[in-house]
Amino acid sequence: MRYDVTMGPIDARELEAVVSHPGAGAICTFSGIVRDNSRGQSVTHLDYEAYAEMAVPQMRKIGQEIKQRWPAARVAMAHRTGKLEIGEVSVVVSVSCPHRHEAFEACRWGIDRLKESVPIWKKEHAADGTYWIEGDEAKPAETR
Amino acid sequence: MAVAIAVRVRFFARLREQAGTETEALHVQPGSSLAEIYDALRRRHPALEADHHAVRGAINQELSDWAAIPSDGDEVAFIPPVSGGR
Image (cartoon, rainbow over all chains, first blue to last red; front, side, top):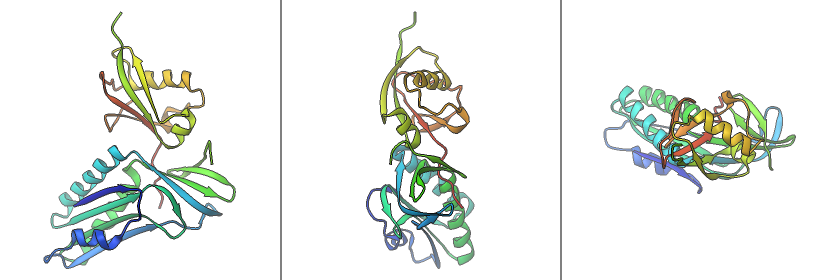
């Protein structure tokens, strides 16, 4: 198990190595990538900000929830903070299980829970301005 | 009059920009709720989000109700809704 909030680049292969073991016949890894557009506008880059002291325990809690639902699962998660360019990896969730079906399910469940409950915020630098993304809403930022 | 308690306030993301600060030491009356503390902070930082529904409070890194009451030395954080996304 590994749960990180980090300023540096995330290596998905490294997280897969953490969850890999001889009884794991399937590893499912989700990577979130910085996209060049949002809300119909072109995006130049993103800033991610975390409440790290709360985010890491919340990730750990999601890992424990995954273990309750899929007892054979092993989980690793990492989220990046700071300035991210287009194409860079912002978040990785890697889950190993004996078989592929539960690996896919547990990984998807993990990234969905992370997105809705881990205190990390995205600031989008777009052609029409700079916005904080809060759920379905884009709210203008005070500073660029 | 009761002796004031000290809390460490932290702001994140859009609320941090509105407050113009990441962290602030605050003295409040014992028994003050998160809602009362936030409203006191809004008087100090009028740009802070007015809508309680667009803010969550946390005490010592645990999400808490607006009625929750922090203790002396606690870390109180005010955070916007998280990114979400599809």
